[in-house]
Image (cartoon, rainbow, N blue to C red; front, side):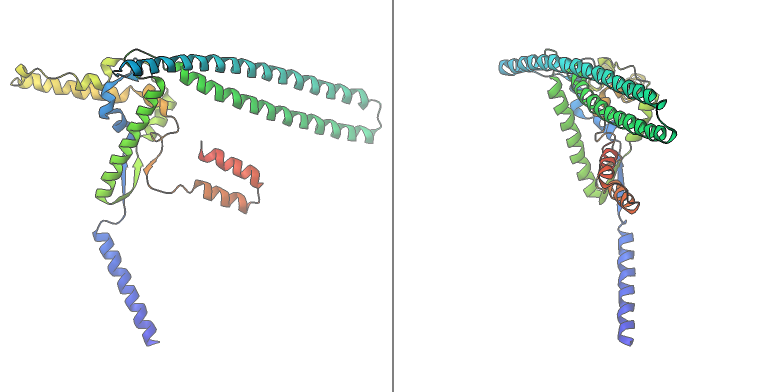
Length: 319
């Protein structure tokens, strides 16, 4: 008994000592970063033109030919998607007609028989009519849902291909997307280094709330001039001859501040290309998302259909 008490006392002292040492070292830190701001102020964005919605680039003859081929393929895909959307629209219209015809036929049959049947038989006929019409509606909605999903997917691809054009001396839409992703990945790398240096295990993204507010306000005009871009800030050097003029120097840096704030404030059309990406996630580095685990446990506890539950969870975590 005495030995047990002695061991327990030693364990308590060890826990208290390690807890104290852990606290002295600062404990587990949680960092934060405004990913949206860092993205927009990334040095690579200096060559980005909001007007062209692409990066300035110098190409050799081979690269120019490749860009032209991509433009041709882009137009061909646009034509294909346009034809596909028209075809899906036609199928939706046809499905609506078939459904209305079937529902009308069921109703006519029900009304025709209702007066010929006895009370009990009429009741059964009503139940049959409701069941058949309900099944027809479920089938109709399932078909429409599938068709609308196909249309939405085609439309998203169509808009992506047509929203950002090809300009001589600028990146293609595909190259632009790859550069944006490269910028985000580099930001993550540097954030990880900074976090490791400070002993930070989780880094929160403080910009996602701003993105949500911007979506709700929908105040952006969709157009950002090149004069407001990051390149306009860094490519406008202060005249050396005015370096001794304190008022001129102060005015220059006040202008830099204003331009930077305007750039960050009005560039929602640029970051809008990254819906459901790192820019809108609340956790940028580390952390474990328990959403799916909690929902799964709840649905299982309430004995809900596992197939529907899995579909609901998948939709929730990818929303």
